Length: 206
Image 1 (cartoon, helix red, strand yellow):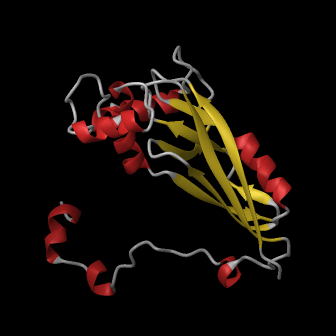
Image 2 (tube, rainbow, N blue to C red; image 1 turned 180 degrees about the horizontal axis):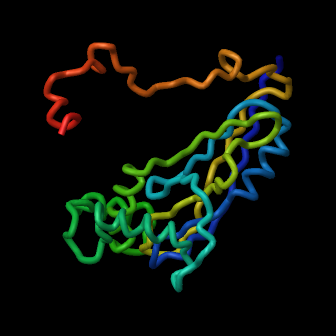
Image 3 (cartoon, helix red, strand yellow; image 1 turned 45 degrees about the horizontal axis):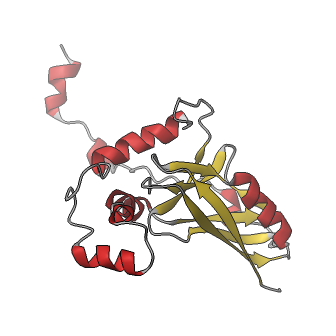
């Protein structure tokens, strides 16, 4: 069984002023098809520390911010957990040394380091997702879309998303565990737990 690795990079343009949600489902599906991997995994990972990857259904409806409703619902929740960086010294980060580091590496001003909200949101939300490939098809269920989320809204920026497809072009045979028997994880009560108690009479023998 030959093991294959196929890597591609997606270049994306975020708009700034509000977090950007890029639907990259079409591109990821094309990369999986081009990889030649029939059975394996696809890792979708952000190159950046203020960005995340989300797998969720498409909400279809768009608001005046060009966000799908479920995206804006998520943004509202994240803003309650981690408020937008709206004023100086709202967060400890960035300190004076980090601000100078930003200038040293060519940032246009201290304001570009005032993206602490984006860093913290990506920590909470995660920077990558891994999906299963079965018989050449990315297994996302009926409704899954893949989104690259740029939480950094300080300015418009070019972003990179890394796609790594790993697996084999061979068949893997029957996937069913124990012939597909449904696993019941619900609690099973003992006879003692189900036994009659005299106190029941207050309810049953009125």
